[in-house]
Image 1: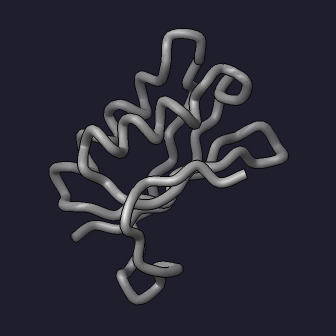
Image 2: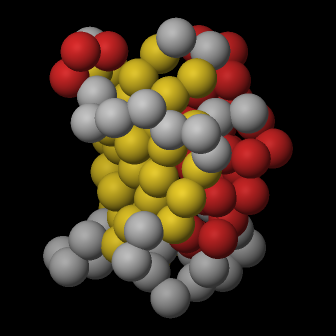
Length: 93
C-alpha cells in the first residue's frame, strides 16, 4: 500500500475539481479524501496499491475540463503517519 499527501495548484477551486477527484479516486480504487485549502489549492490524502495511486495522480494532473493544473506536489508518507483508515473516498468541506 502507498500513502500519499498531495497539493494541487492552479485553477482548481470552483471548477468541480473535488468532485472530479472523488470520481477519480472511486474509479481507481483509491481511498482517502479531498478538500479545498484557503490559499486556493486543493489538498488530497490517498491510500491504495502503488499502481492505483499512480493512475490516480495521473488523473489529478489532467484535471476536469474547466480546470488548469499548474502543479501536483505528491509526498509519499509512512503508513504509521496516516491519519486514520478509510473505507472510501470522501469530499471534506
